[in-house]
Amino acid sequence: MGAALALAERGRGRTAPNPNVGCVLVRDGKVVGRGWTQPGGRPHAEAMALAQAGEKSRGATCYATLEPCAHESPRGPACSGLLVAAGVARVVIALGDPDPRTNGAGAARLRAAGIEVTEGVRAEDARRAMAGFLTRLARHRPFVTLKLATSLDGRIALASGESRWITGEGARAHTHLERSRHEAILVGRRTMEIDRPRLDVRLPGLEARSPRRLMLSSTGTLARPEDIAALEGVDHLFVEGGAETAAAFLRADLVDRLLLYRAPILVGAGMAALGDIGLARLGDAHGRWRLIDSRMLGSDRMEVYEAAS
Image (cartoon, rainbow, N blue to C red; front, side, top):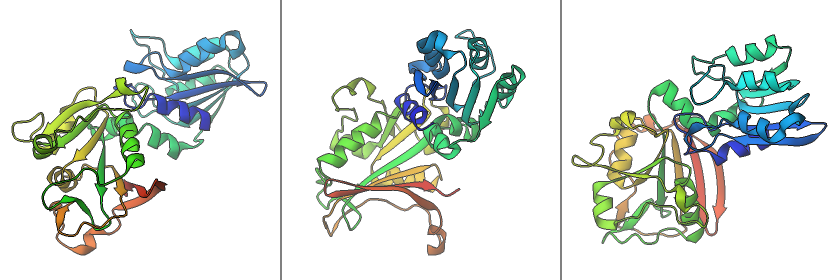
C-alpha cells in the first residue's frame, strides 16, 4: 500500500475532478502492474495497472488507495468491473470512496464476484494523499494550503519591503515542488504588484506542472476567499502571499494545511507574516493546529500543520 500511495502522489494536482489514486498489482510476491490516475482523470489507476499486468492480473492482489469505482462513464468503464473481468483474487483498499456513485458499491461488486476484499489499510495516509478530492466532495471547495516563509521572529520582509531571500535554496526548491502538486496558486494584489512573482515551477522536469495563477483583490480573479468554491478544475489551492491575503483565508477558516518555512535569522522591525486573523481571545488560538511533519531543509526548518477539525 505504501507503493500505491507513492504512485498516487504522482497525479496530485493534475487529476481534478477525479481523485489522484494509486494502484499496485502483486502476484507470487512480485509487482506485475503499477498505475496512477492520469492527467484529466483518465485512465484510472486500476485501469493503468491492469493494462500493464495483462494476463498476470489473474490471481493477483490489487492494492488501491481508493475503493475501485462502481459507475460506468462515457470516459471509461468502472474499475470494479475491470478487476472482476481480470480475475484478481484479492483487493486491498485504503479508503472507501465517498462519491455517492460508488460509496461501498465498488467493494460490494468485488465481493459478489468472489474476490476477497480488505478495507482500511493506511486509510489516514490515503486521506492526506487525496485531500483535494475529499475536501471538494465534503466542503464543496478546494483543499487549501497556506505557505509562510518567515524569520525566527515571524517576519516576511524588512520594513523597506525587501524579502529576497528570507529562506535558502533548499526551502525555495521545496516550495516549487509544492507548487507542482496544486492546480492553482494564489497571492494578493499587493504581493503581485510589488514582488512580481512568477509563481511557476522551476524544477528540472516539472516545469510543465506550473499551477494556474490567481489573485485576491477587489479587481482580481477572486474578491473574497469564499469565492474559491466556484473555481473549476481546482481541488488543491496553494496560497503563497502576502500577509493580508494569508490572514483573510485564516479569518474565513479556509486553511486546511499550514506549510511553514522558518529561516535562522532575526529581522526585527520588519513586515509581519500575518495581519489580523480575527482572534478575540488568546485561548481561541490553542488546539487549532497539529504538527504532522518537521524536517530541516539546509539551514531552514520546514513544519507542516493540519487543521485540527
